[in-house]
Image (cartoon, rainbow, N blue to C red; front, top):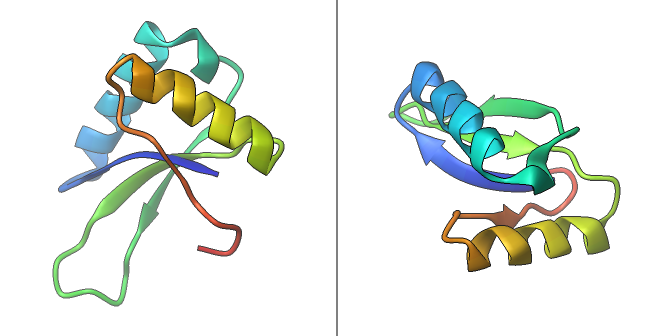
Length: 78
């Protein structure tokens, strides 16, 4: 998985996904998931997307980061 950001609301995360997809062809075909941290005092909405492999995830992040888009690889199960 890759993570494109963390937001204070689901709406902000969804808007960020729409904007990122419009700007970055690398995100076409990926499916976004908004992950929340239900055990925290302050709810955070993490915008993530599944990628077929770790190598591909790292490559997508490298391209996105070079274009100024935040992106980190998320280890499986996190």
